[in-house]
Amino acid sequence: QAQLVESGGGLVQPGGSLRLSCAASGSIFSIGAMGWYRQAPGKQRELVATTTSGGSTNYADSVKGRFTISRDNTKNTVYLQMNSLEPEDTAVYYCNANIMSTRYTRYRAFWGQGTQVTVSS
Image 1 (cartoon, one colour):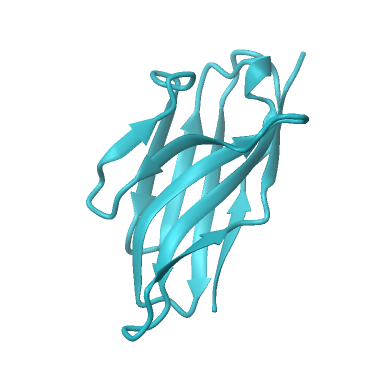
Image 2: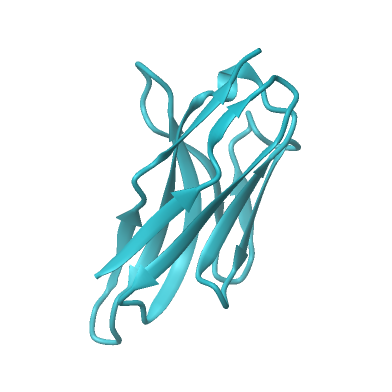
């Protein structure tokens, strides 16, 4: 069974930066798309950014130009560099990855436990 472990959340002032990391471990044969989602209090979970195994990226309009997603396939890790943070970015951020655990299984979506990001002065 694969698992995702996030790190890097915390409290930051408006205009500040944070870098989130998410490492996949366990039973992994192949990893497809990886991404970050977030959920603010009282709101639905929303896509922040995704990246394919080949490096193509996709961003929510609200974070374009401020956030950058990247991945290190040698470490099975995806990152989210967040700059110019705004109070509206406050949420729990979740890592997502499509993982094939063995050569005999299909890709399945895995989720991390979430990491809190709070933007406040």
